[in-house]
Every structure is written in C-alpha cells, then in structure tokens.
Length: 358
Image 1: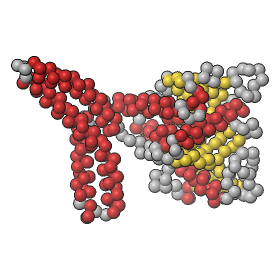
Image 2 (image 1 turned 90 degrees about the vertical axis):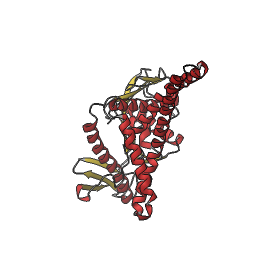
Image 3 (image 1 turned 30 degrees about the vertical axis):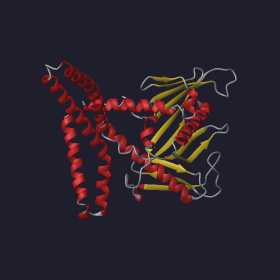
C-alpha cells in the first residue's frame, strides 16, 4: 500500500469511528468502549496527517504565487522564501507521520517480567547478575515504575544465580524489550588477588507480562509438583511443603517458585512467570515467521546473543548491535544513563522498520 493510500485509509477509519460514536445510543456499552479506545489511538495520527496535508497545500499555493508574480520581484521573493521553508519542513512532518503509522507491537504497553541469570564466570558472573538486577531496579524507580521482586537465588558472597521481578508501569515492555540478551562484563573481580581482569557474563530476559486474555493455559496441560523449599537464597527458607514446580506439558516450560511461605502465593507467582514465558514463546514464533528479513537490525532478543559489554577499567559501556559506546559506566549502572542506550536502540528499530515499508 502506498504512503498516500495509507493516509487515506487512516482518515477514512477515523471518520467512520467518529460517525459510529455519534450514534452511540444504539451501540452496546462494550462496543462504545472499543470504538472510543480506537478513536483515541487514531486521533494523534489523524491530526498529524491533517497538518501534513495543510503544509502540502501551503507549498502548492506558494509555488502558484511564484508563477503568478513574475512582475512583482518583492512578492516573488517572499513566495520563494516560503517555498524554501516549507520544503525543509515537509519531509520532517512526513517522516513523523510514517513513524506513527508503523505497526505497533501489541505488547509495548504491557508490564514486564524481568529475568536475570548468571552465565559463564562463576562467582563473578553471579555478582554481575546482581549488579544488572540492581540497575534495572534503580531504572524502574527513576521512571516511577513498581518493581516487585518475585524470586531470588543468592550465592554466599551476595551474587545472584537467578533473579526474577515484575515491573509495573507505563510502557514498561516498550522501554525494556531490547535489553534481552547476553551482557558481558570485564573487570577485576573482588575474589581476584592477582589484579587480573576477568570476563564473565549474565543473561537478561524481558518478557511482556501476559494477562489471561492474552494466552489461554489449560489446567490439564499443567503438571504441578509440591516440595519443600531449600536454601540458601530467596526471601525465606520454608519448613513446609509450600514450594511449587509448574510444568507446562505442551511446551516443556518449567517454573519453580519457593520465595513465599504460602503454597497458594507461590503458585500464583509461578503462573504469572509461566504465562509470560508461554506468551513470549508464541510471540517469538510469530516474529520469526513475519520478520525473518529484519531480525538482527537491532537484535533478535535471543538470550544467547551478546548484546552489550560493560568494561570497568575503561569506564565504558558498548552496545554491539548499534556500535554505540558510552564512557559513563557509573551512570548506566545506577539507571541514569540507561535511557541513552534505550533511546538509540528504539530509534534504530524504527529506522529498520521504516525501511521495510519503503
């Protein structure tokens, strides 16, 4: 579909929704809600399209004035100046409309499940995993999001083998979805007596938190095992059989939860994580089918893909997907510098998706 045809489609739909809402007295309450929501989503795009067309009309008028004012040099100069200004502004406005017309990821507005795991590197990898988890917790605080720790498996020296959290707020998944992958650290470990720099890694998974309406999980597809929680790690170590292991038989996904003393609470937390993982698997399968030509522009989000290196001796953070290096590792690790990386990744993704529409 051409760009102009796409604009016509959006405006036609917007007018159709306005007409439907004007006759809302004969519509069901649920229909009114759905129409109002879609209308609200289309309103900013329709406004930008109207502004773009107004600019084009002004340009056409200025061009006509130049042709009609051959005998009035001053008037012609004024019209040419207007043409120059409009010719500079129009491509910017058109690009903004194109960006707004990009297909939206239905999960962008969702909350997220964050999973951080130690990779290669032993104790140092676990300490780095704890640093990453703390970085996202601080970033969530800066953005006014709620950060709920769901499960933590600690090492004796304070590292994390695994840590899982629910992050709740506006457009959490949209901001964090490019954080999935393998994060590498280069530094002198606290356990290193010789002062040598070590390289270790941790993996990050950011999953959109699925509602029951997003993914249907049948109870008959679950195997639930109850066992006694064991330490160290977690918020507490239970002395009753309250820990839960949930296996989703169709996919083989397994979730264990033991941080709560209540079996019911552990199951509820486990189901939230399970639902997110099953939903993520389904989304990944669709992404592979629909966007095989585009994956790798910003990164597939594959947990095995090395996406970023944190080099402490040089004070730098490098994102390998977009070849961006920031010499502000301290600010990144307290969340303050993370927006610069995320904004660049988001912009690169938009450029890649716009290219596929051209």
